[in-house]
Image (cartoon, rainbow, N blue to C red; front, top):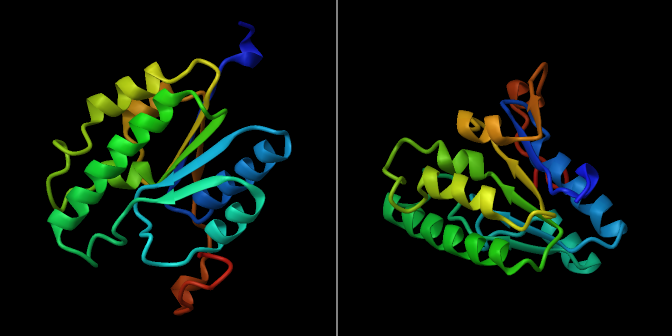
Length: 180
């Protein structure tokens, strides 16, 4: 296998806006080139409607919201169950070999949760092992703030989004079509 046939690990992290947006653009580009694309969202809940889901359903990109929403919107047990289910689902999908590009949206955020225990339902060592054992030609994109050092060390590309100016600071809330 040549270097350009090997699956890459790309990480979009940092406190600035644009991590998921960058991954969405990559997904569209890959689909345009005939790649089989899957996006699993670890924090977003299927109880809400997101613009990316509406569009991806139209263009044939599989997308699943497996989370419970923001950590303060549900009980820790509800979040723990969502994370456990999301991780089992992710491992099954990665092992299937059915995809060329897989995006694990906000996995970094999930791994960084410290307001309740998650190590037993989303173990970092299992995440690292699963990343390493994915099909060798599969590109994997991981997004979210607070990426673990171990994931950064494994990555082929790390982009850190840095906030310079944001309309949130002026009291403008999330904008439909921009944030969701």
